[in-house]
Length: 122
Image 1 (cartoon, one colour):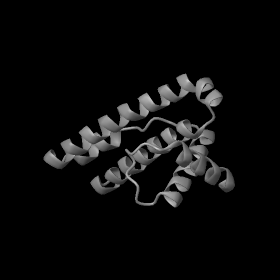
Image 2 (cartoon, one colour):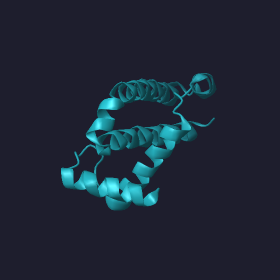
Image 3 (tube, helix red, strand yellow):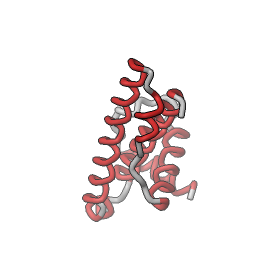
Image 4 (cartoon, one colour):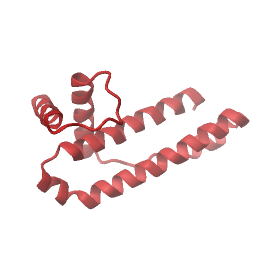
């Protein structure tokens, strides 16, 4: 795998983790409570993998030892059902807020708009 491909995978996984956060934030409160531990576990594994991947990428850029480090790295698995929800949330978010910084919190009104857009896509 090339360095640029690995860099693209990191970006895609960052987007997936952002979509997971969007899904959790836009879910009804009772769903949030029900899925709290599951969400925390998925988020924790994903953040750990992203940190490790970014460290590998920095190492590779410095040492040019691409194959050994990148080929051994594995992304945590996210089940298809959750992946579908994440993808829908990301598509909805990008449609409604195309240039919005991802670290900016959503207002209650924006959460409702995002939830409605996601439901229209399903």
